[in-house]
Amino acid sequence: MKDIVRQLYANLLKFTAMRGSASNAAYKEIFPPMGLLDDERVHELEEILGSTIHLPSLYEQALTHRSYLQVANTPNHRSNERLEFLGDAILGMVTAEYLFYNNREVLEGELTKMRSWIVNKKSLAVCARDLKLDTYLFLSYSANQSLQRGNDSMLADALEAVIAAIYLDRGFEEVRRFIVEKLLPIMVRESLVHDTNFKSLLLESVQGRGHAAPRYVIAREEGPDHEKHFTVNVLVDDKVIGTGSGKNKKEAEQAAAENGMSYLATNPKWKRHRDKTSSDTI
Image 1 (cartoon, rainbow, N blue to C red):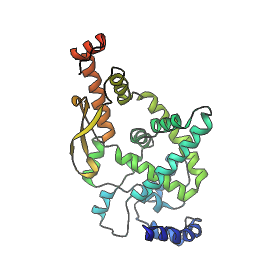
Image 2 (cartoon, rainbow, N blue to C red; image 1 turned 60 degrees about the vertical axis):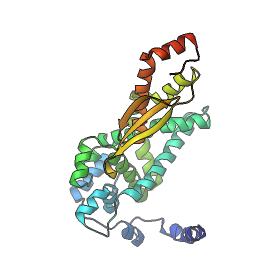
Image 3 (cartoon, rainbow, N blue to C red; image 1 turned 135 degrees about the vertical axis):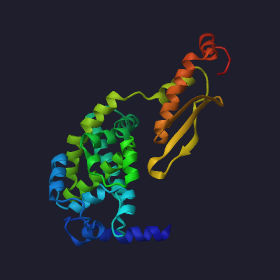
């Protein structure tokens, strides 16, 4: 741990010197050109993003899924995973700032809920499709097939990577404008359409009738890393009342909670417990 801290400290001066023009040698070393975006595609991407592109290799990396590197066999090039890490932080910060200034009477806990309600893999994937980023991704054949079947995580990750690319290429003010003008309206709209939180509803229903909070247990985890599929059971008082599946744990838990709500609405013992406030369990 001490070695890591020393390295972080030693890199502070390097980082300060590096932050500047996107055309300097350090940027070219981290983002070597891949030759994937010709001038025409760069112009199309500029129209989509509403931003001038200075360093195309940034966006090439942002749009490159790790599966493509296995096909391209270019060891000097990288996937978009590191840019995704940076873009996620930038998106969270800009969204937090937006909520902070536009909800002046709302406390910290509620602001956190609002941010998670707006920014999630589903809303990011919808943004990416609206911007047609799915037509720009560099994927292996199998990963592309997964994308066509509705695997939205690759789209969400790519959009976060593009956010980082805009920040590194054009600076914070430009990426803030992109997020606020291009992304937040779509994400808010999507959240309004799909705002049912079945986990919260199930928690309220169960605890309001004297039971312990539901527990979510992964029953199965299948598929390769880029196409995981989860099956989750939800238990109340150690009894399975619902099962759900999805492309990630959160989606599977929501599906299980929705089925759990259906169980509670139709199970006779639950109705008797509710109506008579007896000590019967589910």
